[in-house]
Length: 325
Image 1 (cartoon, one colour):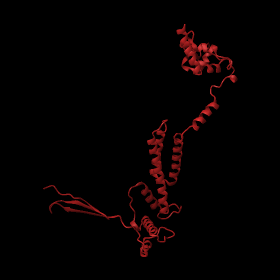
Image 2 (spheres, helix red, strand yellow):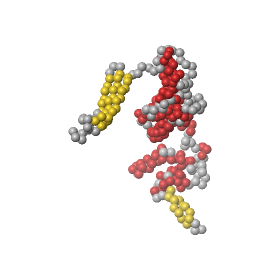
Image 3 (cartoon, helix red, strand yellow):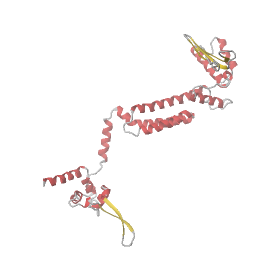
Image 4 (cartoon, helix red, strand yellow):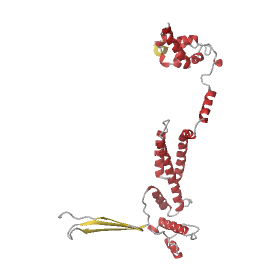
């Protein structure tokens, strides 16, 4: 008898611990008139409620459900638990989900959080807000490279934050990418302000200057059309002049607009150089000569020299005709 009663006691304890008995009381006939064990099994354990299509008296196909084979075993614990469940009305039953108690648990969990843990919980919201802010700033400046980077960061962060414990190193990489995009946006605004593109006025050279600024943001090297006499070159020269005057504490002009080269060259008469001293001088020689004999085929030759303050470097690339040698 003891061996037979042990499993039954264990099952009864499991039913009580898992909250089955309160659920049985919740669906009992006292709380729900007309409710039966099949209704409870269908809600609590759907796989133990078998449905099949049968023909009714009128010949129409209807779905009829019944308990599974294991639920019909004599002495089933579920049947006994249903029969012994207290017939308590719903208004007198203990709530299966106590929202007040669960809310207190949440508040206690937040109260004992460390700053690092709280930051980790807030990081998805912070990254989302940062990406949205970056999209707003990019739309105002229209930077292609930043637009592509935002798409990559959004995809990367969405995959990364799906895990409950994301890699801190990868999160740091995402934050660094956002910092780089922020620097590009700030650089774009600075360049537009320096080249007079943020005043809302359309001039003859506005389109060329906008393309020039966009190229400065996306390309490592940019061709200055017209050199020092072009619209971009004259502004660059003016920026150097103002920087030199600021470095040498010379009075600066009030309005650095788009002026011609002839006017800018006047600044040299005041004794302030237009440009800072060069860091070095590069000399490149290219030619085509026949080597090693005068009747050899003329081939390209190249000699490159860099003169610095403390040293110099030479690099040569020479070719020879090897047809008869």
